[in-house]
Image (cartoon, rainbow over all chains, first blue to last red; front, side, top):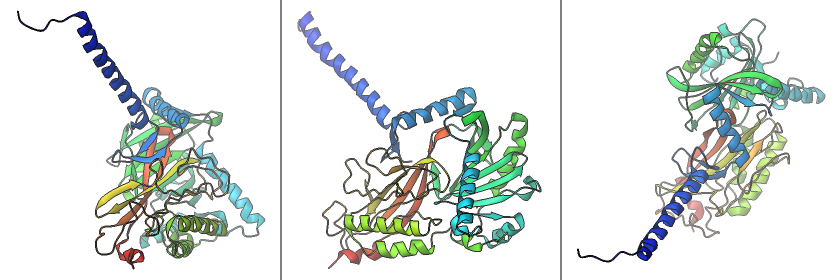
Length: 244
Length: 187
């Protein structure tokens, strides 16, 4: 049989560099994926998969991934180092109110940064087409109070005394969102319903959902148990369908 | 209870502080212009603490946002389009010509040299990008020329990280057609 003689040295010369190259390539790919991948990396990619130039601190990104996994496998998220967001908002509003009172302008919206509104006032603005979506009055108990908070460019509302406790509604207009695993459908769109355990073992439930050109977060200050979920989702369905 | 309609109207983009800041910004070019404009803008925020805006413009390519209430990580980035082709990001590493003003009120946390900032309950926090698109500063994006450059616009966005579900939101601050302004770089 003709052919080049193969000895152990040539095998060694052939195999070792190639094995090393494969190992190096695999290792490099892994590292690259860890740096740039949307699920594992620290770099923030835009919706086209391009790097934005922003990098999230690794410990924060790790916490986010842990939350995502916890939601998938345990059905809830632990944010034990943070205050419940409804409480945070109420606390901040009280601080702003105190400053306005101290300055002798307790009703000055420029100092407060928020306004209180009632459903009938709101409806007048809805008719003019200028107001953002809000909860239907039928979901508010008689003693409920509603506030609109100005942010940039988020629109945040707080409604007290609903059957789900205080309800915080955040609308991010002109916003697109990265993919996460949806676990529920509301108003014909996929959303993520999460139960969150905050500092002091206080519970909340939140729905995260893209609807049209806005992204919505609707968060309560109590855990929405399975038997209450249909009504909770119906309330959100009503809210979203107001949106243009 | 007093209901004030001005609040509702100022949710849009045309509040008085924004218009004032815009006029100032448009009179500057380059990095110096960006930094000075950023400082002026933050002064505007301080003088009108409850006001807000977030935007990009043709000169300084800036996006700003802040929060009254929420504690969140937010990043600001923006990019140019020229002759229909997307140009690099301002925040590329190393930054080509960055100017990033963060945590105006000092109570902030940043991670590295980028416009990523942690919004705290102190609401005067902003991120600003930009400083190129100027004939005074040679730059890949600084060669805009009358009649030959078309389809030029600047798109600003900021991203908000939603920690409980590890999701990023990308909010368009503005997308501005700059072709009407190109004469600023000519003659």
